[in-house]
Image (tube, rainbow, N blue to C red; front, side, top):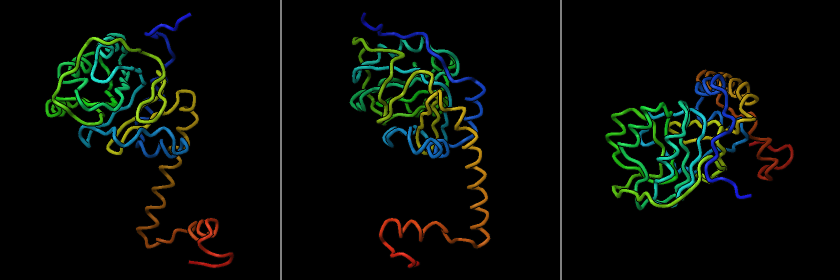
Length: 227
């Protein structure tokens, strides 16, 4: 049997876990996830002060066509992040002020699109978080079918509806829903460990104690040799 193009039912990361995750930087979550889940750097915040956290609602579109994005907006729940596989196309914007205003009114947490947007200054004034490949003044078509709710590849990362999405000035990281609860304590510990290390550096302890061993393992230093 053919799989439906629109999957409406999927489990989302719990609001409690999403709220906890929102306290962390994207870099922290990427590190504790094994340096996996970070989208390609081409997908960046429209403005550096934008931050988004929420659950993914995935959308697969043909380059330059936003028909399925309109449909996804109607299916989204408050707190969802539209994660759109636009095939990294920059020849036409997939969304602009009108759609972003509707997203904000619907309670959608933000938009992550592997493609272009437009009306960037107006979106900045709205305070609505948008992460994209860039901008283009061309408008999209609304003609071509696509899929909603299915796994997509966005910025080189497989994203499934219900996964956690967090984006900030460094970029966007996606954490698998089933792994989120186990990673949050590790993220908390990493924040504390990094704060302690920064405090030590500020007190003059600038030596990277792991460096000699790493250089020996890489064959740069011989056994027993020090930098």
